[in-house]
Length: 614
Image (tube, rainbow, N blue to C red):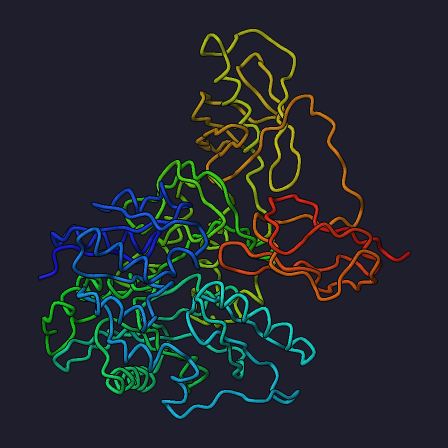
């Protein structure tokens, strides 16, 4: 029997594994980088071991250090989670060679399927060796790992070499393996996958299907189970193919077989030899704990002959610290508050007051709703996200709510191009016009020495806020009937709650303040000083870092004085395991270049200046 598990991962998945281990009476050991010294997963585990450094290559990708940590902490098993070393056969062997139980598939199965190129060859599918115009568009893809890292869609042959280089660099950074390959890119397809679970006694379960078509940068955003709209024949076909793939490599444990579905055809993509991020939707529908099943299988227990029956529908949304309106730029800073209604499941690696750094994936949490029908599950999840309290860096919460309520999604007509078509409309700012007034009233009450309002006429009071990138001024006054503001009647106001009567309708505004950041319901504002100090102005054409990160590359031969074209890539930043391209804003001359490879930058750092050609 397993008595102590080291979780070779971090964040949300580490916390999730720890939770199940506790329920099973198993002690847990966490590992953490220096950047994660105070992270939630290190706090909730029974024991924690430091991995010196912050970069993944120095910490969570160091299998030798993790095995030593497991032995030092007295663990007798290792759970890899997902990402990092979860699909590394060498790590699995090292764990076993150290006398520890590996909670995952055999190294031989990982080797057969972990490399997407080898997996395709195993199934008789050849990648593209030479790309011509007739092959476009194509997808450049990392041979190891997943999560959208090391993936690029190429629509123009002239871009292929640059995208190959960027994908290799990103894959090497994220997975320690820079191998990439090229395959045809299917437009308008759906991403459908099958959860498999196999024991050491020859039983393989196919736990239904999932649809993960809503993706940004080839990384999933919203997932659901079962995949809607599949014909009975296609559903049976993909489940049978998944079982066949698992049996072909002697698979053991939890894994996922992924397909791109177009019409009634299913194209094999890959087999992920690990637990998937979206596994909670399958757990909800089948009433199982997949982590508990992984542990039982690793202990040698047999699965039942048939899997449990599916019940209802589940939908999961990934909450990211990122700004979808700014090319999905990752965000950092203090997470002051994160809370969702109890009606849904919240899996997170953060607690109130934690800092979101630059070194790892920007996912804050997964929010999951389960209901008897798809429509009910979607409604429940959208409402929960809409009501969630999220105080801190910018997130994709509004995008998630709008996506769930989009008619194309509710009618199950989505595909992997959903955000390519709809992103501008889904990210259009729609702040509450009365939020600045509510913030000003709460602020005034909070600063009142008497804890109330003067009952005498006064001059209008003003307060300025930045909301959705624009400055707004809130004005209110003490009238004969109490507080008034442009025809809006103030029913109640204190430091945390403001109630306004707007055209006869009472609206509640919950207000929270963290320094200059103010949150009014779900609207974020920044309180502006009454007399702002003069600030330095950047020259026109200045390229400022849109996020904290590291300059990983400057375009070959790029120097000050070089001519550039609008849209031309100038340099690349790496933040939260993704590379972000910085392009020339106009055609002209690069008059200044301050960025150098290896440089750490903060948001707003001046990287370069392009002077536009008159």
